[in-house]
Image 1 (tube, rainbow, N blue to C red):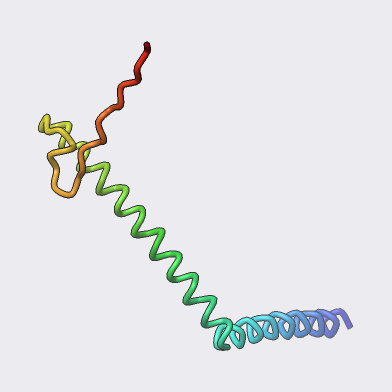
Image 2 (image 1 turned 180 degrees about the horizontal axis):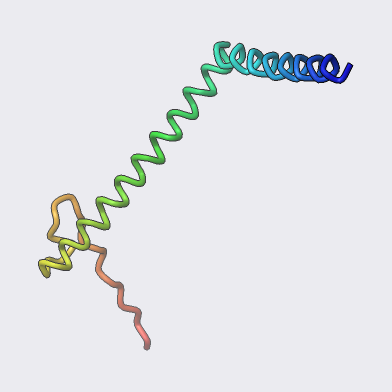
Amino acid sequence: MNARLLTFVAGGLAGVYASAKARRAAYRLSVPGLADQAGALATGLQAFAAEVREGMDAREAQIARDLDIPLELLPGRQAPPPAIEKDTH
């Protein structure tokens, strides 16, 4: 009796699990699911590119400091705008 009940419960749980997995797989293969996946991929690539850019900038700044080169002289960098002096009169 206990073995039958255990087998029944295990089978029921396996069925629920398989049904949930099948539903998720069907959604992933549908048009909205593919659009969601493409959007997530684009977001991930943008985040990765931003992190790479940030790391590149930090490394360039570190190399410039080590070589005593002003950051403005690095290619692709612009000099900061000149400070505007305020009249105190």
